[in-house]
Structure formats: structure tokens, C-alpha cells
Length: 486
Image (cartoon, one colour):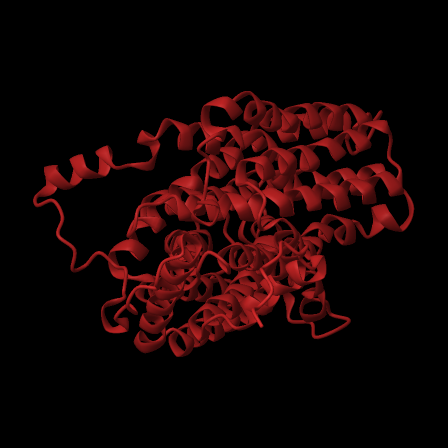
């Protein structure tokens, strides 16, 4: 009796959604080390960031006329400096390996947070140029350097530790975990407020320094040389087996785990300063016009990210009555927890969709709900905006990060990840140039308010990304693929 011929039976939709989660659960130990540390680092970073402007204004610049102005500039040094730092330090993971890059990054981050926390207990407030100001800025400088190495290294690790079946979910999960870390500081008032532990902002800074120690310990423990080498070797073998199976070929011989590290230390390269500079210029990601157009086309929709801390809290506080306006932190911090929930689910549902189509749909779904707020200050419209724009963000942002990592030539993922963040750096510079004007004109603390006009302008700006991607479809869309799509 012969076996029945194979049939093209319909696949189980539920299994298609659940399987990526199952694959991720069986991910290597090294990947889980990256994930766990990423949650703690996200909590520490966003936790410090949420108090930094208040700390500068109330403590560092105490007694300075209009201290909010220099306070905002100092926070801008941190946020913009980090993104610029990634542009220059993304190569560290490529050259020295992800394990060392992550460990070095955490030492810089720890040193910076200790400086910031300790300065408040050591020096008295004395305004601009004071010892407290300089020590705090020195701490920020260390964090900028550390984060410039950290995020490119984390995404490089995800690329190295995954195969085509697990990569999409792994990138989405890392992005989701970062947002979980961004949401957890919402409860920091339990540490700060006198009605609870009463540690004050300075005490909370020490707590975040302690979380950095924990993240460093996890990284050293989970990402030892053996686990990293094994994770890279297994991922290469699995990728080769998947590609061979798709072509009906026999799987290749297993990759040697001992020599699996993808750093460039042992690879031959150009000799001499000029040769290295020339090689850097010739092989820079910006020499690819399609890649360059693509990442810069995303700047308009990324303005909505910057609104989360530059516009949304003030808009909600000044435009809504009742508990929504009084407890504006709840709505202003709603996006990160929604991303934590939606990013893995959306990744599972859409993992087989073409990346470029996802970028168009995702940017549209993220930008379009901003028009809701142009109709009025209604709590339901605000909730609809936060919910739908988050779904759009979950559709395109993790896939963009995956795309930037996977198109990179072998051994240059960190560089590509760092360069891909450069438009985000520009966004952090551009939005503050006009956000204050929009707030002062349309949502002033006193006088006539017209927040609907603010969001009409903002929605039109954000929609430009979708328009640019649609117009460029014929140019870059047809060969816009990741490894998973090949």
C-alpha cells in the first residue's frame, strides 16, 4: 500500500500565530541573556530620563532664572547624544564581538549613573558651570558612550543568535522588552514619594544604578564565551539547514562553534590610517542610495515618537479635564505597555508579510490616528489614537530594525544599526525646534487653546512618510527584502 500523495492542505491559522512564540521559547540561553538585561537597562534609562529635566530644574540649576530652558537642553544632550553616539560606535560590536561590546557598554552606563546619583549627595546646587552641573554632565557623557555601544550590540546579538524562522519574533520581542522597561518607571513614585519609601529623585537614581549592576551581572553570566559561540554556531547551522531544505538539498556540515565569533579581530582588513578611512567611506551604509532614502523617509512618522515626551504630557494636562488631565502620566505612558503587548503578537501574525508592504501599512496606521485628535479633546478619541498608532508602530518599527540588521554584510551589523538610528537623532533635534512653538500657540498654559490645529499639523507631517514610501515603491520596493524573504 503506497502512501497517499502529499496535499496542499490549508495551514492552521492558530498554529501559524503560536509557532513563533514556541520557537522563541527555545531560543539559546545567550539570547535570553540579552533580553533580560534589555528590560533592566530600559527601566534604568527611561527611569532616569523621566526625572532628569525635573532634577536639573529643581536641583542642579536651583536659583537660576528660568531653569527649565537649560534643563531641557541638558536632557537633549543625553537623548540626541545617545543616537549620535550609535552612529560612531556601532562598529564596536562588529570589531570586538557582541559579548565584549555589551559588557563594556554596561561599565560605561554604570559609571555614568553612579556619577549622576553621587553628585547630588556630594555637591551643592550652584547653577550653570557648578561642580554639581559638571559632574552630572560627566555622568551623562559616560551614558552617551555606553549606550552608543549598547543598542547596536544588542541588535547585532539578535541577528547572530537567530535563524530566519526566529529572527522576526526575536527583533519584535527585543523592541517590546525595551518598551516594557520604558513603562515600568511609571511606578517609580512608590520609591520617590514621601508617602511611600520617600527616597527622593536622588535615591531613585541609586536604584537605577543598582539595576545596571544587575544587568551587567546577567550579561556576564548568560553571555560567556561558550554560550555565545554555541549560539552563533547553532544559528548558522539552522539557517543553512533551512535554506537547504527550501532548495531540496542536504543540510551542510555543522559550523564549528569554537570559531563562530563574528567579530572582525581576526579578519584581514586595510592597513594604515588612510586605507581604513577610505574603506570606511567606500563601504559606509550611506553609499547605498536606497537604504539612505528609506531611513530618512521615516523621519516624519518618527516625530510622533518624540511627541511622547515633548508634546503629549503637556497636551493632555492642559487640554483634558477630570482625571485624564490630572493624572496625565497614565495616558502619556500608555504607549510603551501597549507596544509590549502588541509587538510580539503583530510580529507573529505578519511574519511572512513583505517588509516593504509592512512599512507602508505600519507608517500609515501609526500616522492616520493623529487626525482623530484634530476633531476634539475627547477621551475616547485620545484612547483610539494611542491604541491604533501603537498597532501601527508595532507593525513597522521592529521590522525596520530587523531590516537594518539583516541587509548588513557579515561582520558589519553594528555599523548598519548605528547608522539606521541617525535619522532618529535628527528627529530629536528637529522636533524640539517647533514643538515648543506649537504648544505655546495652540496649547498655552493660559488663554485660548486650539489643540485640534496642533494635531492637524502634526498628522500631516507624520503622513509624509507613508507618501514617500508609496512613491518610492517602484524604485526600492521590488528588491526590498530581508533574509527571511529570500
